[in-house]
Length: 364
Ligand code: F6P
Image 1 (cartoon, rainbow, N blue to C red):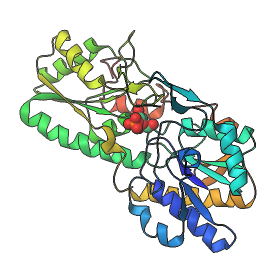
Image 2: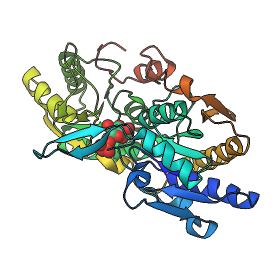
Image 3: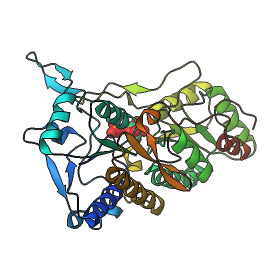
């Protein structure tokens, strides 16, 4: 049984297709897709989707996931309405494991990010034969050199920077682009370098708005009356916290980040920025659409390796990219370490080296 959990991500369908093709070629397996992460298994009636070579034909180029996904609910936090109309969450994990046994499900493949792999690990500890595949546009899993979907998101963000540079220059404006990146600034950092932004603000390096203002003023004194700033949704000012809003979606347990760009705009105005400032929030555009070739290829490799692990009964592992190989890593290891941007890493050094202000220093 395959499941896709958490936010959608370019390449999910390519993973599904690769896995189903291998299973079919082996002649020994039938593959089911669990609707919307593991929720389909817990729904009444159960919602499991047969996956055949015909149903996955040509889907590798399609965004989204043909079996649906969600970042709400799940076996350990299933939302239930109380009599007074409020909601509570209950643990249905034992019921889920039992249901898999009853249905004769011999292997579960969970395609998801850190939250999903934590669930995979907990289910594995309850006896579920499970394998993980790393998915997230944020690229924040340390166990793999890269997650699928990340390269496509970086390209989408870079295209946005390219477009904002020309309009910023035409209007003499400061244009702020807010990109995804809850805890890790990889999308912001890569797209700022690729697109040639002036400022890049990431969760790992708290920013000082006065420094950003100095950088903009220096540009103005050199006759450059515009600037493009790329900011991660999870970026925060020095001594400040992330910008978030209350989420009213039932069962949504993540902190809902929102407003980093708008807040920066106001901070820059207060700091005395002389130029007009506008913000663009790229949002879910980064997760949708056609995956780049790189993501389709790595997704096919992940699907292939996951099938190999299923065949060999190597449960409790996640497939991972360790250039140039696809390997398997124990889930325990996967959930113990995240991949954050090291402020001293080569990519940050490169950004500073080509004149990008990281919000902490105007000297680069
Ligand atoms: O985990 C990937 C991610 O894209 C984060 O960067 C972002 O905060 C989150 O998903 C938003 O998810 P959703 O829009 O589904 O709530």
